View 1 (cartoon, rainbow, N blue to C red):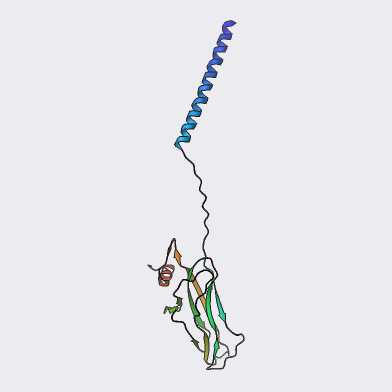
View 2 (tube, rainbow, N blue to C red):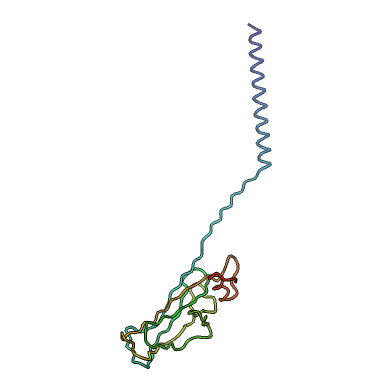
Amino acid sequence: MKRFRNRKRQLMMIVAVCSVLMLASAGWFAGTSAYLTAHLEILNRLTVGWNDTVTEEEFPTPTPVPPGESVVKKVRIKNTGPVPCYIRASLLVSEGTVTLEGMDTEHWADGKDGYYYYKDVVQPGGSTEELFTAVSVGQVPVGDTVTVTVYEESVQAFHGSGAYKTYKEAWEHYLGGEA
């Protein structure tokens, strides 16, 4: 019986020693693992910039205009978005002979493609100079009304982290050119 107790005691002693060794080695491996690895979490929040522009005009409504006379129509485009942008505008006339007066050729360039291009970057909250300042009707149209429609578009003034150098470069890139 004494022998059985000694064996039991020896077995318990071996299990205890093995447990202590396992715990010690686990701590060593954990320490080694921590020494060989590092963890860092960085949270990046990205927001997307967007263009948002609106046409602003000064134009009395309704406006009977006798043939040969002009009426005030001042057109500018405002950047209401959060990013700087370049702007272009196209003018469509419904019918009749209409002359746009006071065209600004200093700040606007005729692209010869149906669009007038604003040469400068328009900052958020800023507006272009007036594209033109008046409209005159040369002959009475068949329907007794003339509609002058201003269609405008914008493109961001930056690509990635760089800025376009000119309005031409920005629009060429946007339209798929080699700029």
